[in-house]
Length: 361
Ligand SMILES: [Zn+2]
Figure 1 (spheres, rainbow, N blue to C red):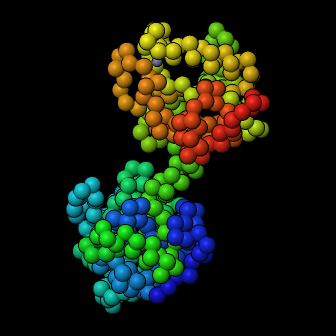
Figure 2 (cartoon, protein in one colour):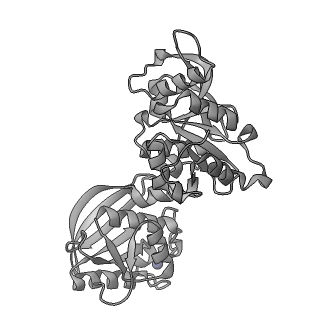
């Protein structure tokens, strides 16, 4: 069987929006780990039919799995059957059907559709059965890099009812041997499927989703002037973050931004081992002089040594948090007060438009 892709021109590695659109329009998507060690065919559970089941059984490992949230599994009273290698399978199920035709392609399709049905109830299922639900990490691929989470995220992003996806791993026992590295893309090509790398899906989510929550907003008078101060909480890890804003920064052209990793030794005690205190003071004064801009103040995600400089712990997660806060503040374009190639590259990878050069204030 060949599925006609709505985004044929972007294969073999469709960007996330194409893969999401494909799933939303009822087409399967091929998900892989980028190194072609693992791959799975993913379908929107709510629209699965018997031809789709046949396709999965013909090309997959023989197991029809269903990716769902923990709350959905609880609602349908699907207790854990096995937790192995961080993978949580619930007890297997069949839809309770009048003709007891649960093992056929049609029967399994009905089971999968019912797992996604808004009016499904726990008593609609017989346990054990021929379909294998998998409970996914609540943060999807941002919490666990695996095929089930990728299927779950795609279903959620595609607006699939119940946020439930059916998937089947490719290859024997779900694995692809090393010499088969091109097999995934060839398979996608042969069957007209959009394909996506799990890491690309994660990047798409980081670029497009709001992962910080505004907790508190207040005014902060300082020696150099008054700032609007925001306290944020990271949705994924609960880290506390802070921003200091001057003027109206929402949209309307580039905004000057200082990214300052918290450094207790320097910022609070004026350690002379690093230049953090002077840099913080200068950045705040610059923002007040400009009358418009943001300082993002980030606490390190790892515990710092008592006198350790926070600037030594800047990593991708630092810029991810900064990009998230700037997006929440509706900053469209960023000009960095202390530019560096690493900062520019990281911010851009998280969806920030970074501008460089003169005249960006
Ligand atoms: Zn420091």
